[in-house]
Amino acid sequence: MHSLTAAVQAAFAPQGLLSRAEALFLPREGQTRMALAVAQAIEQRQTLVVEAGTGVGKTYAYLVPALLSGQRVLVSTATRALQDQLSDVENKIAASRRFMNNAAAEYNSATQQFPALLIAGPFGFQPAQMFTLDPAERAEAKDAPKVSFAG
Image (cartoon, rainbow, N blue to C red):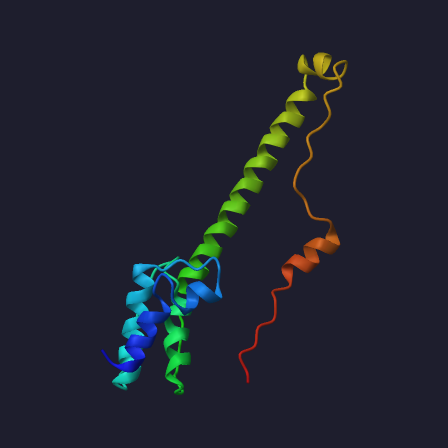
């Protein structure tokens, strides 16, 4: 085993450098395998393409070997999975808002119609609030954040 590979293996060991430096660090097999592959690619001056799912620990897996090597390395990460997750969350929020507004509209309509009106009024049924933005919030929400990758 080469010196960088050995150093990376030791860093990711249960009582290794990462466990001592970060109390919440727990060694993960996939993370260690990825880190060793990165170390081997650095030692052999090769290009490495790695795809790993959420929760593998990619950041430590590529940064630890890079830092231990003392060499300049190029790391490029794709954020497609994160974009998909964020889009999914946004869609779920929008669907939940539509559901809530539809339920509130149906409730409000029902409490204003006869014969429910005869019961709703005396028993203090209040109109359900709907999720809305005031004009200032709406204008702010329409402005997309400005992102620049210029260096």
